Image (cartoon, rainbow, N blue to C red; front, top):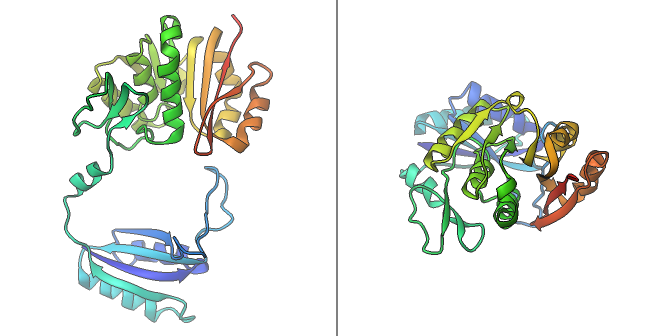
Length: 300
């Protein structure tokens, strides 16, 4: 494998990346901030579904991956020759060292301690001696490996509340289950009759596989399969869909039941409180690295 590295202005990034893929045989193209870790570094982010103010950085670094040196060289020659403004810069054209990519990927995921005795452990790792309760989870196509603050906060809540409330968790809903990590954690902490639902078919399949690996029973399917009310409703998504889902999620919480929401930035907390206020009084139960966990309990 060979990689072609080009420096480009923001205005050229989108078209150039598309050309490398569609016309010039690139296997993949990644775009990075050419000024990362420097005083000129800029953050570009936004809510899913919302347009970004900028499609790329003022100085972007495009890395195209090619099967051979000839293909990478031909691509570089073509794009540089057809750059009338001379705004593109060839930064590198180099061989990508051979690696055991499976082992390399696995090395990035270590066991994660949720509490002192509750851990998430990838299948290829030894179980830590301190782990009394273990959730086996491998990275997959679906979101939720236990490393993100939103997931950690949900898992801490489940572990912390289970001694007092797990006896009442005779039905649990994990709405937007992703990898199934929250549904599985609830099962490991004593919950029964758990519905894990998602609009993404890949998430449903991943959840089924992860449930089997942890020897827990879940009912997995699309959102419309979840009906009735639940003593515990979990939803780790993002603030915008959580706002839109407020009427539906409120309607799923049984009398005396808990609603647990994550995927919310601290600055979005009031937005969520307003959306749920007609039915439930959301409060911040935890915070981690700029994210908050919000919970509510319906009156019995």
